[in-house]
Amino acid sequence: MSGATLGKGLIILDRDGVINHDSENFIKSEDEWQPIPGSLEAIAALTKAGFTLAVASNQSGIARGLFDQRTLDAMHAKMLRLINEAGGHISRIVICPHGPDDGCECRKPKPGMLEQLAQHFDTSLAGVPVIGDALRDLEAAAAVGARPILVRSGKGRRTEAALPERFATAAVYDDLAAAARALIAEVL
Image: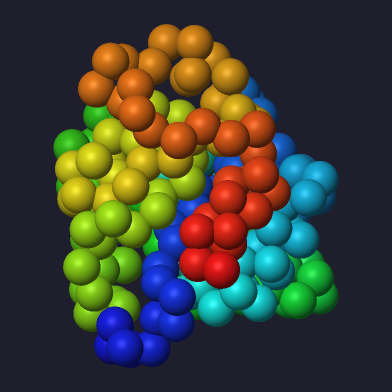
């Protein structure tokens, strides 16, 4: 897929805490995967506005033995089905299955997953909105010249309260729905 097919542009979303409710005990099953109110509709609105959406998500529960790839695939099938039913579309999902001490290049705050998406879509990540609820999401975005956006859902309120000075100018919204409205308003 080339950059020319990205419509209004690429938007990269974190999953847990942005699209679905997060848990300190991890989201370990299809039943535990529950959308945050308004998130599916926000993805639908972004899709209808012409954006291409992708998900980049740390999933260390695999490395920790809390769930396997098959279970993660079932969670993502549920997520994609619900998003499609709402009228939205996710073009690509990339995950990091590694634990925090595995030394990989894909686990956020490292930029590996974002770089995978740039390669897949054959596009620069300069200025691409990356929406997350954790500092590591913002750090990964900054590492590739993308545009870090924080939502207060999930871990976002705690992240905002301790936000480093270098992210003082990052946009902060209550949730994905609010972020989507702002991004759509920019292109109208």
